[in-house]
View 1: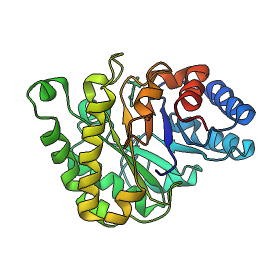
View 2: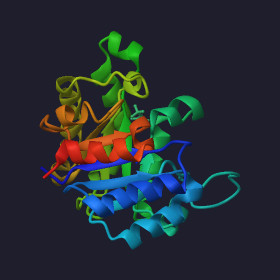
View 3: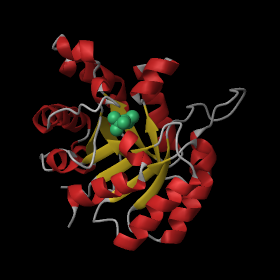
Length: 258
Ligand code: PEP
């Protein structure tokens, strides 16, 4: 298995004190053999990247939660991929379900963002996942496939660059599990992870071997180990539980401890 990736999506939360607590905890206890990605709000990126570099923790990286796929121009309030890279980031999350639902991002927008990330030398964490209604209707696989379809060209061009030698990860995040306290079962998540890996492999077998397919949706200290024990779950994208340094460190250590 590739080295696991545990990513923190702070959303519009957190501050430099939280970054300091997490980074100090990692520096003290080590990263536990996993790659750790911190994704704070834009305004904190440069400073958190500086703090991460200074701490010299193996596998610690910083990423943005979003970007605009245009290179530059009259797009008030937006931030380009080159700007995210310039702030010291190695990663960016694209296609989070909140971006899709609240800000109207389409599957094509997400693919453009992933390509823009690559163009700027950033690795993308591409998020996909079905809503509760879609799941109830038995459409999970069809929905995830339709979200992946515009990414075919992106997957085909995938190469080195990210912490795992691949410049993207895919996060399976069932929308109904995000922030709900109810995570997917390891077995259900595994089935979708396998589907995702097959779809990447169809475009780029080498990238499918290297890319990490991670799970997101109510990952907590109490359920992380069970999820991570499942073959094909290469880590996690963590929202709520990444806002308490202790919980986030416990997920990192409890799940994939050496
Ligand atoms: C997320 O928003 O990406 C997420 C997984 O949130 P939570 O862990 O709070 O469900």
